[in-house]
Amino acid sequence: MKQAHAEQAVGAAGGGALSGQAELHPNHFREIAAIMQSDARIHLSEAKMTLVHSRLNRRLRDKGLTSFTDYLALVKRDPVERRSMVVALTTNHTHFFREAHHFDHLRSHVAPELRDKVRRGEKVRIWSAGCSSGEEVYTIAMTLAGQSRPTASWLSQGDIRLLATDIAPHVVDAVAQGIYADATCASIPEGYRKIWTMPVGSEQRVVTDLLRKLVTPRVLNLFDAWPMRQKYDAIFCRNVMIYFNDEAKAELEERLVDMLVPGGFLYIGHSERLIGPVTRRMKAVGQTIYQHTGEGRA
Ligand SMILES: C[S@@+](CC[C@H](N)C(=O)[O-])C[C@H]1O[C@@H](n2cnc3c(N)ncnc32)[C@H](O)[C@@H]1O
Picture 1 (tube, protein in one colour):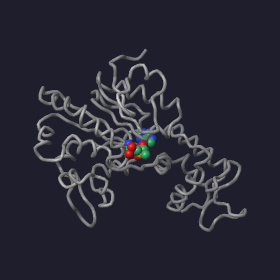
Picture 2: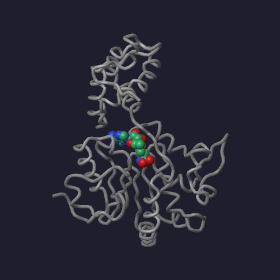
Picture 3: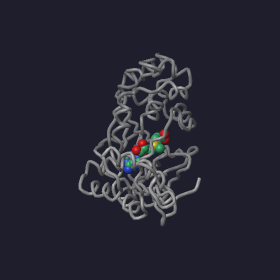
Picture 4: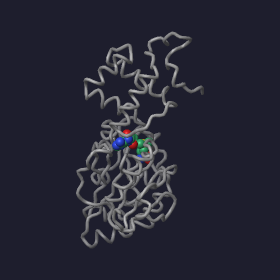
């Protein structure tokens, strides 16, 4: 597909606007990219001009506006629309059991220690940071639960909480609902699907109460202050850092590692890597799986 060039407007067909679509000029794009960088630390390269154009044209229509100049004026005076614009430009693609080797590791290397912690009366905490609509956190829950009621009994016997956070309120609402289309649930292995989800409504399934009760969904910008006090046994921050520049990645990774218990695990996406000072504090223990050595910041 031909990509937009920074000096060329998107939505311009032979110099005229496509019917019903406002033109996105390079100066509009630069303003939008600056807001994304300052509010969410999301880096938008010029290659994203077409995507920005199509996602924001919908917001212009909803607001009854016909130009990006007017829309940006609105964004500048209205903090609610500014947040809606940032959310509209997030990418929320996810699915159940994505990067399955992480859940193999969780099941075989982490869950036994977590069960021991519960037996000792200690808390278990896991965080899905940048959780999107919840497929990740419910995959974690299913992995801990196993494929039968008896293998899940320890989950209701201890203080176990799975925190799921995202900057986008609509996906956090979806986590709270725990309802997914049948087609979405098709990627859950049958042994888990038949016990931990139930048919509901038309062509949908709901995650069972036992697992939903473990999950606390919250809206959180990863670059704001974090209200959490306790440390985490494992943090999943996968396919989130790909949207940030190196400076933001290094800053976030250092903060995530600060939130791990010594020996805790950090799972990142397949195309992500640890950079900066944090590499000294983490040991690679699998493909994009890292364990906290217990070392503090330099
Ligand atoms: C591609 S999804 C990844 C979902 C899931 N972790 C996975 O791997 O399937 C990326 C998520 O990160 C969220 N996100 C992006 N920037 C964020 C920020 N600054 N703070 C919190 N969440 C953010 C987006 O809203 C989106 O839902």
